[in-house]
Image 1 (cartoon, rainbow, N blue to C red):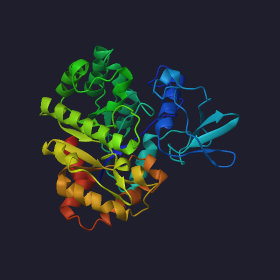
Image 2: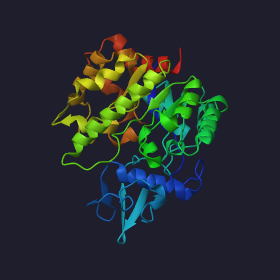
Image 3: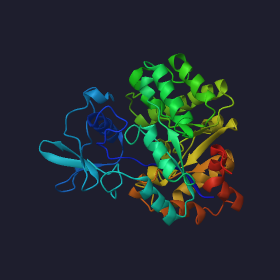
Image 4: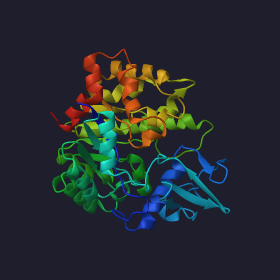
Length: 373
C-alpha cells in the first residue's frame, strides 16, 4: 500500500464555509502568506517585492491585518494584493490551481496518476476548518481518503467547552480519523504552554477520543536576536520538550510530527545538521514523524535531492523506518516537483533502504498509525 500521510483538499480562499465570513478567511490567508518563505513579486514585471506586512507590531492578530485589498484571482488561481497601486503575489499556493481550490476529485486524479492508494487529508486555518466538508470528501472516496479533524487552537483557552464539543462532533459524528494540533496558533491567546494549565481539559477530552494526534510544531514565540536561526533552533527544541511532557502525561496516545523537523533552520551550507537531542522524544515508541522534504526544501535543492538522502538515512537509523510516514503536502509540493517525483526520489534513489524499510516509509508506518490493514 502506498499511503500519503499529508495531502489537502480545500475550497477557494474567499469561501465562507467554516468561517464567520469570507473576510475572516481572507484575513487568515493574508497572515499565512505574510509568514511564508516563498518570495513575493510584482505582477507587472515579476520583480521581487517585499512580503505582505503583518500588523504594525508584527503580531498575527487576524483582525488587525493591514488593508492591502488581499483577494482571490480565481481566473489565475492565485491571491493578489495591492501596495501603492501595484499588484503583488507569491506562490504559496501552487501555480496550477483552478479557481484557487483543490477538490477531492482533483486529489484522486493526482493519486491515480502517481499510484497512491490512500491519503490522509490535513487541515489548516487558511485552507479548511469545516469538519462537514472534510467528511464529505472522505464520503466520496471512503476507500481512498482519511481526514484529520480541525481545531481552533487559539480558542481553546477562552472557549474550552465549545472547542471540545466541535472536536468530539468531528470525530464521533462526522467520522474523522485524526486530531491535528498546531501549537504556534495558541500564542494568539497568550504565552502559556499548550500542554497544561488552561489546555488540560481540552487534552483530557481529546485523548479520550482514542485517535492519533498529529502536531505541527513551530519555533516558539517570535524573539529578536543577532542570529535568528539560533533562536528558531532553540525555540523548536523548547517545543519538542513540551511534546515530551505531553507524551508523559498521555502515555497511551499515538502521535506524530508533521513535515518532519524544521529543515530550513538546521541547514549548514549544502546539508542538514541535526543536534543529538532532537532524537530524544523518539524514545517513546508511539511517536512517529513525517518524511516530507520536497515541499520544504525544493527551492534550495533540486530533484532527485541527493543532498537530502543522508538525512533520511539518519532518520531511519535513529528512529526506524517503521515510524517514518511518507507525506507530500499535495498539492503544495507541485511548486517544485511532480507527485510521481515525490515518490521516485525515495523509491529509485535512496538505495540504502531495504525493501522492508521502503515499504514501511511509503505506507506501512502510516497504515499502522491509522489502524488500516
